[in-house]
Image (cartoon, rainbow over all chains, first blue to last red; front, side, top):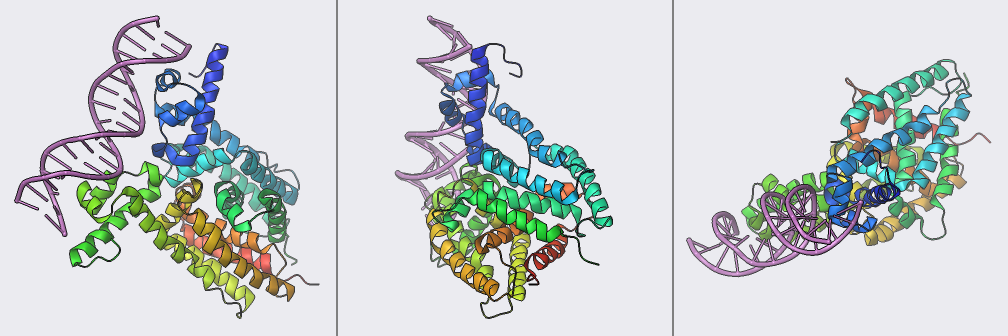
Amino acid sequence: MTKPRTRIQQRNSTAILEAALEVFSQHGFRGATLDQIAEGAGLSKPNLLYYFPSKEAVHTALLSKLLDTWLDPLRAMNPEGDPLTEIMGYVRRKLELSRDFPRESRLFANEILQGAPRMRDAIAGDLKTLVDEKAVVLLRWMDEGRIARLHPVHLIFSIWALTQHYADFDVQVRAVLGEGHDPFAEAQDFLQTLFTRLLRAEPV
Amino acid sequence: MTKPRTRIQQRNSTAILEAALEVFSQHGFRGATLDQIAEGAGLSKPNLLYYFPSKEAVHTALLSKLLDTWLDPLRAMNPEGDPLTEIMGYVRRKLELSRDFPRESRLFANEILQGAPRMRDAIAGDLKTLVDEKAVVLLRWMDEGRIARLHPVHLIFSIWALTQHYADFDVQVRAVLGEGHDPFAEAQDFLQTLFTRLLRAEPV
DNA sequence: GTCTATACTCTGATAGAC
DNA sequence: GTCTATCAGAGTATAGAC
């Protein structure tokens, strides 16, 4: 169902993927059921399987759309820009992704938690390539003394960990903060401060 | 099966919980099956259900042991100690937990990802209480000018996010780093640097 | 205390009427 | 393109022999 032609097909395909995102992101691949997805999409189970040949196919369709979106903010980090501006922009965009697409974040988290059985290649391939490329840029900035010296790949990990935490552990974050908080607004401030302090070039 | 009496019961109970940890941490509650757990424990499925009345009971037994262990490092942060030493000690111990008990970390992550259906109370209760208590200590240290001023609860979140990332996203971390790395040793160095820079009291 | 056999439900997937 | 009916297998749980 890669190229839906009619409007009905378009609508149902979209409804299925939307419902599947909801279910897979909450229960993981094995914990999700076609019944739940079909109900969420307002279709019968056989009708769902008319659009996608199997549960696996629905999941794969979701994942393959995901990685690209996920990496866009890192791709957008400009090697020719101002280091601190570029890195802070990356942090901000990544946190916005967590805020606006928490289910996608959790879908990804579930996949990695389970050992990435359906994403191993993409991670060891496209993802690693992009990170290596950006690590070179970060290293150059460090060599030029424009940001503090740190392990560039772990620096990227730290951005992932801190931003995704607010999507993946949202329930815990809200429970611990208590009432009357805006977790993402506070996180934006906090991470701004954190990375500014971390990256400020050392006075030599 | 809270108080096993014979040695066989002790051994089987332990084997079940060990196997269940393996399965639940990888597939989440709904994705895990008693078949897998029974096989891992070397028991028949009915025999497993002799020790625990239901799948739910096995899962609950695991979770209730977990939270305490998980909070110990934070509890151990001494209000009377040297601020930087205490916080860095907490970071180190938390990362060691990730390294030594990655399955427990993933079990916890799965539970939170799924909206913490079986841990909501514990999180809004014991966990929040402990965090609030330690946040007061951190605030005092900040007021005394002994560490930099930051939102204390988000500071704790950042420690959780950064340390748990190395357990929960282990597959991704290793894939991106490539061969010839010791993720946890590198993380120890990296986080040491990160938090030292972050917390160094501002020259006023 | 432990096992075999089995009841019963859920799940992914298919067949075939409309 | 969509539905009803249905299947085979997996899933949780129980009964009852030993």
